Image (cartoon, rainbow, N blue to C red; front, side, top):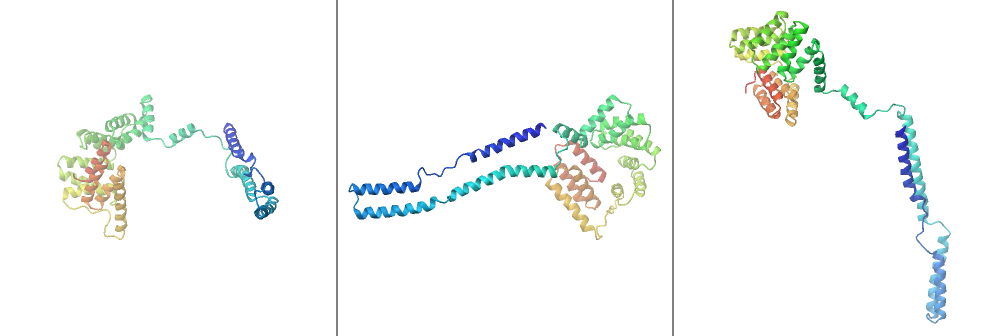
Length: 360
């Protein structure tokens, strides 16, 4: 209600300010009627003639001209002048605008608007927006606050652990996965997640502790793809190429050939066998031009704006999948240049490059 009173007061002030000049009397701009002027001129001519200042001929010519102008002034004085008519029309238009427009606007608002909706103060809107589109850091802070008060919440630890891992907070991820396993019991996903976190702490090296975690995950679920992949990677890092190749091939056989995990595994197989990996996409197929165009558009977008880390990772993967190792390597270098000053992003690029088999 207060806002409506304020709006009405302001509208009244504006209307008063605009109407005030229109209430003032309009002046014709002349202090003396034209007819009075010419009558006085005739009297002056007769006075000058009587004093001998004008001869008869000159006096008659002057009186004739003054009389002609007096007659013309008589005709004009009987009608309302054109400027006066314009003033009247201007006043009418101003009155219509000042009163008609607000009335019309209010009528339209009552008909089409929602005057009965409750107020939405900025504070409540910001609170609602924050709750609906909360920043990830705020959400993490809330979960961390709850875990501080309720450290026995195993689901909380299991939920935040993968988030820590994706954000590059590897030590926190190790702690969260360990707590989740202790509270919830053994599961393949949690155990393989702990192994991946340990490996990330070691800069991508599958340590003995990480390998033990992957073995435990496979004992719980022999089909766990993450554990299979990192166990094969551990063999490759140890230099046991035959074992690594056998593990990669076994994993590749269980994956959809066109999937990203399958293509990643195929890169490792190709590196171990020396046989180029077959692209997931048939570049000779009819859809190859469309696929290449999509990759080129992504490349052009990242060239214009290199802030999209996920876009760079997709571009690196796309070029590798298409079998263009040079462009994949170039995309990695450009991604690193674009993400200079962001250590976590550089770490993710390095991990993706290792997984894709892209060498510096």
